[in-house]
Image 1 (cartoon, helix red, strand yellow):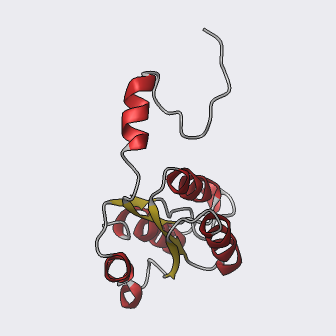
Image 2 (cartoon, rainbow, N blue to C red):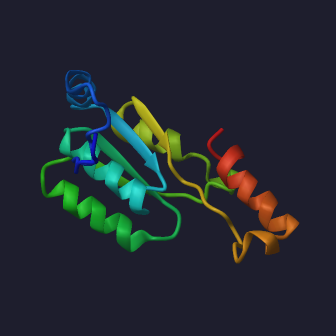
Length: 141
């Protein structure tokens, strides 16, 4: 069987199952962390296309977050940007802010992550490794 092009939301080979999952997203309240990167922005657009209410989390890239917000709001999607440093315990009210704004949360996608202080894996020092661990393992918890 050869490879074929698929739309970003086509995940399952069983198209009936795929349709049931995707069509069940209308009016769901979805918060996506790390929403301004490649995967995150694709998730924002996919959920928006299905009629979900979207929380667009960003750490530093406000320009991209606002651009995503503008793109999906012009199609009538309810959405809001939320800035937070997931490594700062002082800024961990992100989920609570989303719930207060939209009256609940149905889906949380912990997409934020990366390697901090990355040059070359062999040059990664202990403090950069610890911060990377905090971002990828502790922050979603």
